[in-house]
Amino acid sequence: MVESGDGGGSWGRIQQAGRFTIGTFTEKDGIKAGTYRVAIKDAEISDLAKGTVQQLVHRRFLSPETSGLSFSVPDQMSWDIVVDKP
Image (cartoon, rainbow, N blue to C red; front, side, top):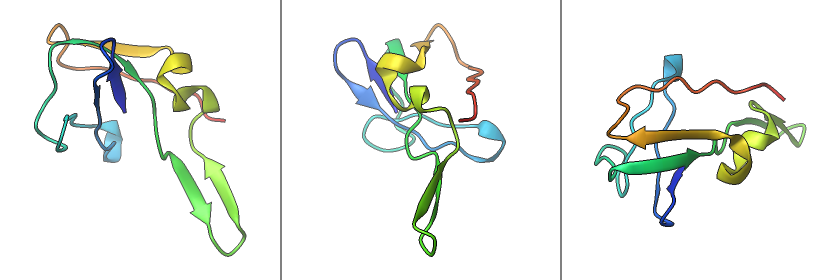
């Protein structure tokens, strides 16, 4: 999930090898120019039989306010986002 300073938001799915495409209404329709704060959502593995959830990234990355991740569009066309494991 990405969030702009004006309250607008966008999203994209992280694919294998860490690649992603961001969109506003659909996954591939793009986003407006601007600076966006980034959060990683739903990065977890659930084991329904055991009733457990394993987070795949540190919890600080679950919110754009605490992740410390951001990027600018169109200034950047490629980003390396590195996150810590829990």
